[in-house]
Image (tube, rainbow, N blue to C red; front, side, top):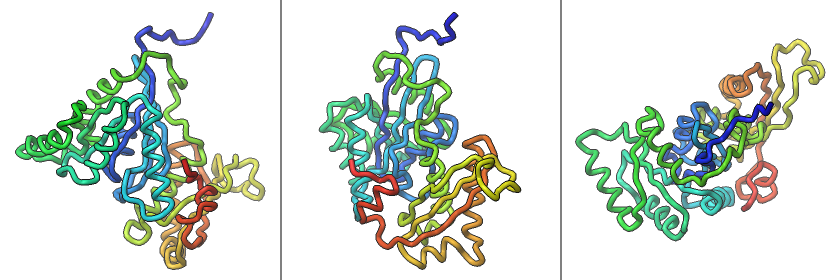
Length: 314
């Protein structure tokens, strides 16, 4: 007897790209919709660098959400590649979700993205995120400002909060209606198709951003050097962990290395402890984490170094 779960003839599946300016809450919304942490978040703008794919499976649809880097004016080769990555995602999905920061009036960056999407033939939906931060007396004014910016598009607009979950259920239903009819693309228990090493590296980078927000905003990258089951790691028999992770944190200046390490290694220890806890939640097991810091001047403008760190041109 087959154990394959029967699929309704009306079942839908497809891809949704989250597009928007930096720091509008794309990664936070992805985590809220999935119900688990699959994307790193930070108060620092331009947190997302990889086009992470998170998978939401419901009783009537499977939605593969592509969390893209924020679209901004690039100032180096890395920035150019991140923006190109976000733009190229638009043509590879079934529907685009344009995420806007509803608690603030629209700006030139928003208008630029609207113009960019208007030139595409793909369906677009709009979500005014952070709506929980809008005072009740300001709701109409804020909404009208976005309606005015979008008046020529006729794109459906929703209000939501990636923090409180307000409006998220209705948003999922609306996105599902735009997906094509088809079977599941992934097993229902899968919530991300990102390689393990990328997820682990991002968890370390998130801790760097959280603890060094002013000093080292974007000139940091993380490379996972090794991931091994603890039994196979020589001379580590006394370590009480399931896996060992060895990683290198890249910065551009010696002063940044000093900040990352901290007095007596205190800052690196704090970053490592935070990352290790997140990793253990990800793999559902104990982790031994060892971090190194390396200075590579102007790595964000070096094609070979960007390729080594996974930031390929598209």
